[in-house]
Image 1 (cartoon, rainbow, N blue to C red):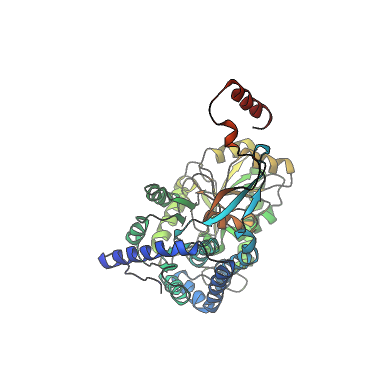
Image 2: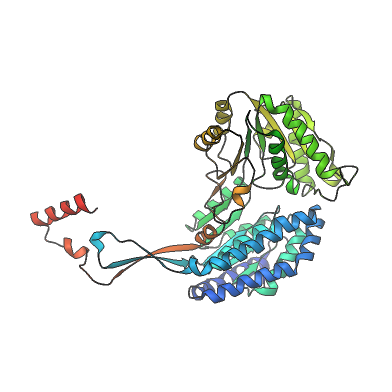
Length: 482
């Protein structure tokens, strides 16, 4: 069974963490020899359990922050099912040792990449997509043959209960265990010497995780965030850009790590973009409800603390001269903020420095693309960058002149939907990659193996004494084979 501990850390909970970690240290050795069929069976059980608990997941997500059912299916259930299906389809190939070329001076030697499980892992998940971001990394850990200790966010307590129920039903604690609790529980978990830590969250906590991992030289995957910019140039189709930006920005009430954070729009396109956003809000939420707040297709900010933070960013932007171009309605009692677009936003406003993580989209105009690129490059590298343009030269310029974890051209977020592409950040927005095979690699040590089958011993060619003849032989190798 999985481990459920009190909301705050106490002596009993601390002992429980250490007990289960010790069990997983034993089990991880046994899992090195786990077969393809054994791993496949565990993946199938996880998929079946998530689908069987779909009604409870939907109910819990609504209870935690009124997430609409369709968004739960799209953003929580479907990614887990898709990740399992992709892993099951490809796992045999991933697990198979891969023979690579050997140089001519190693003739007769087979060189092999041998994928071995790193061992014990810790997966710390956030609250915005708690099912997705707990179980998709777990898919990678299981596929790689690792044990896992899971720590979902206490911010979504109802979903935590469902996650715990699923884990208890299908896993033994020496392989997978789930721990509920606040930051003190996470701190205790981070004290253990894991072989790998997978954290999804904000950069500040990412630094804490990396510091804890450094004490044991533990490898990390850090899926962080940051301010993902959108460039809309003078050639872009503003209606198309607005539709696609709105779809990514207002999904889950803006609480998505790769959501567009702000728009740099060519000044000739600003009003057209605003008009398009107004039309889209009407079409998406006012066709079947008198207001966005009354629509059953729109969620809420996760809690009042986050609501107050976002509302404060809006007010600060207004103080600095910004005006509301679209939306702007709020209700603190319900943690509600309408889809909101701000114009005339000062470039040094707080909302242009802090990750918004809410349904607010500030717009800044530019006239010269170099100005927009310089603005982006002056900030920490984002998790994602988006550009809308009909000009291939513009898209190529943006791709080459900026650095980001991933980029989508003429759309948002689609680069993260392809399991054949790696997903992750760079520097401030993340360390390591995930998604499909890349997630498998994060929990795997690609062990280098060399097998001498026949031929000369390469080291034997250069044994002492180090004569002039030996020196000439080495120089020959350097010139021709090195």
